[in-house]
Amino acid sequence: MSRFPLIALISVVFSNATCSFAETETEEAPEPANNLVYAVDWKQTAAEYRALYYVVESWLTVLRDTSNKQKLQDEKLKPSRSSFS
Image (cartoon, rainbow, N blue to C red):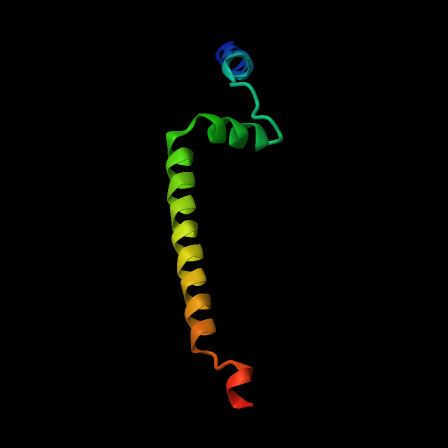
């Protein structure tokens, strides 16, 4: 009986075992289950967030001002009740 199949089988078994052992050592740390940590960190440090905040703030200011102007114009165009008496 030849020893080659036995040696080949042992080498395959141990090579798979060492490969899986090497993979477990180099695995990265698992991501946290809650991504809220990343969101809060991005919100506190990102320049994009600040830029987005300022853009939305200015847009809402313009929207509010145009809405107030429209309300004033509508009030001016409404006839007063005293004029019909």
